[in-house]
Length: 262
Image 1 (cartoon, rainbow, N blue to C red):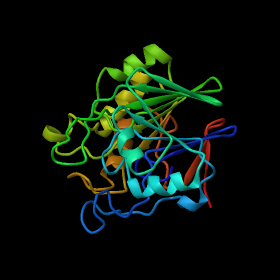
Image 2: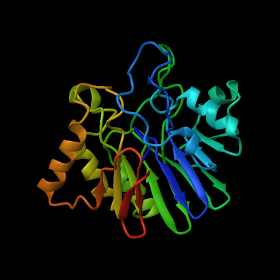
Image 3: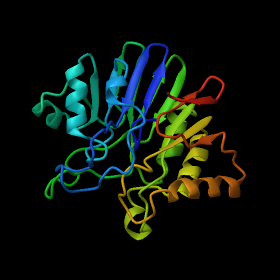
C-alpha cells in the first residue's frame, strides 16, 4: 500500500501499479487544490520495474500527470486506461497507452487485464464532464484473481463481476470521500457499502484504499478507517478478511501475514 488508491501488486515477477500519485496536491496546479496530508509509504525511486500501470479514470487524485511522466521516463511500462483517456497520455508522451472499454481485455506476458464497470464519473476541466470512461479492473495472473475497483459508488456490478469472473482472491475497495451522502453517494461508497461490496464479491481478502491521503470531502480524514472497523465488528466480519494497511505496509497473501516495509 503506497497511499490513496496507489497499490503495488507483485506476483512472481509481475509488477502492477494502480492509480499512482506522488504529487503534493491532487490538482492541475501546484499552489491550490487538495493538499497531501501524509507522505507516500514508498518513494517512487524505490519502485521495481513496472510491467503495467492501471489508471481507473481521469480525476486528479487518480491520474496524476507529473507522476506518470516520471514513470514513463523509467521505460518498459504499459499504461492501461479507460476509453478516451489515451489521448491525454499520448499528448504528454506517456506510453505506450492502451485504452479499454468495459468488457475489453488486454493480455500481457504473465497476466491479463479486464476492464469492468464502475459507478462514477470523469472530468479534468469545466466542460469535459463524462467525455471519457471510468472503470475498475480484474487482473488474472497464474490462476489468481485481483479486483481493483478504482473509484465507484455501490451497485449491482460487484455481484455481476463475481458472476463473470468468480470470487477474487484479493479485492482493493475504496472506503473514503463519501460525505455528504446526498451528493457523494452517486460516486463514492461509504465504509458500510464497501463491506457489502466485499460480501457481494465473495472476496477471500479485501484491502481498503482511497483514504487518509487528501481531504477531499466532509468526513474527517481518519473517519473512514474508524467507520470501516465499526461496521466489520457490527456485522461479525473479521478484520483479517478486510484489512487496513498502513502506507508502506506489505501484505503477503500466501499466508495473510503482513510486515512493514522498511
